[in-house]
Length: 133
Image 1 (tube, helix red, strand yellow):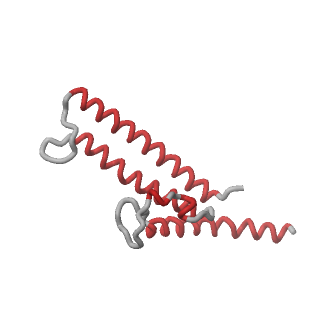
Image 2 (cartoon, rainbow, N blue to C red):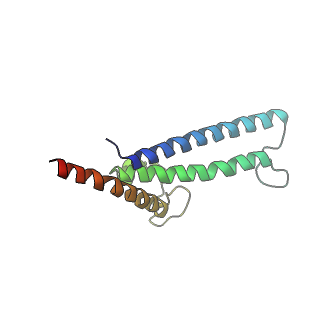
Image 3 (tube, one colour):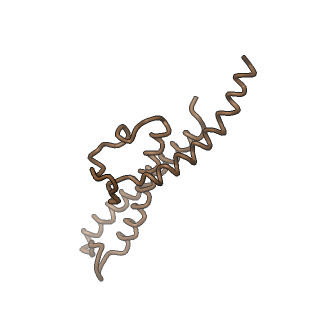
């Protein structure tokens, strides 16, 4: 049986993935609609399209949060970073801070948070097995 903490994290991942897909689809439809209408599609400068910029600003943090939680979920389940994410998504530098490298500090915080939940769940179940045997 899977732990409730892992199920909670997995459901959060699924919800975030759904939100990302819907925002991305909304962004795509907004850009195609703006192109059809001849409206400004650029995101920088004085004539920028504020609606597209707002959608893009909502999408970025969702994707960042999903990536960190996805890596944490895999690590809690015993996978290595190389098994979770291909090397093509990351830089080869040791201390890189670009967008391609996952924020391992944030990942560690999530792992620690959920390991606390796992520890709380496993202690009573082990105590029940000892008493019943």
